[in-house]
Image (cartoon, rainbow, N blue to C red; front, top):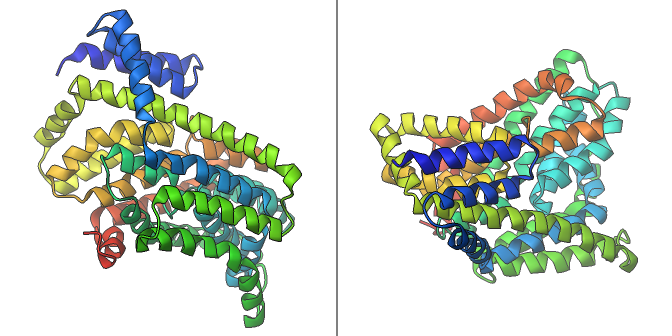
Length: 432
């Protein structure tokens, strides 16, 4: 392996991040400095610019701004309140009832909105004060909110799975969406078990028992919101429309739903569109910069060399998967999810393919790994949203976060070493 490009890439990226340069520009600038070690300056600048431009030239990527817009419409459309009401009737009577409500509502909100930050913001704002009023510590409430908000990135529709499909060279988006259900629900279940045990030990109150009539009543109220999942995923799997077309349908459906609920008015649209545009611009810039770095890695043969290095350590599937999991957990601490998927998929995917691991399964493993990274300092965006809303600090949240981290890692290990947890649904629908 030629060491100079690798050293330049790593040191320059660390330098730019350490001086506070935004992640997207850190990636683009370190990519530029790396290619300058191989070709002259002007062609290097032109090449990086071209790669950033062509990296966004993908029909599948159109789904991301549409799903972001539908998520913003949901956040403003009163959907979170209805999902919380439904979750409250399901698990309110169990130990730590409000914490369990937070987890279920965050899973539903994250899945429907496709945004961990939107879920953390909505759940923290609505449920945080209620949990504190019922005697829950704000640190425990924040920890539950932070970890549960990320599960919606595994449960479809998920922008990150669309990005993985692009980075992997075309793994079916429909298959990835189906593959995310069981791992997402399993992770949520483990979080609920830990949250219930913690709440039981601390003596936190339950939210009260609900009658069957109340369950059905809240379900009917939440049903139009839940129906979006059926329309989007059902339409993609049945072949009625692509993921991109489904995202446009999601925008139309959520806008009409917000109007029916009378939570969204025409005067609100400029603000919603502006917020969606800002978020989309940030995500797209990250994707463009990351695609340039992915090209640099390929140009310097770094993925092939790292693949050979990993396989020289061991040809045991379990050992290699453990190493990759550890590396991804480490990467997730320092890098945002979208660039991490785009940069490290081309590096690790050839390795796992050579060991006979399905790319669909590996996509879910990678996303769940990086979801854990969203909850960890110093870059964990969901962590900072959660503690900001709860008005607490990282130091105080760490203690209740640790057992929830452990629950997510146990779920990750099960998904890693039991492929059918991920592949059963895609195989059932013919995505072999």
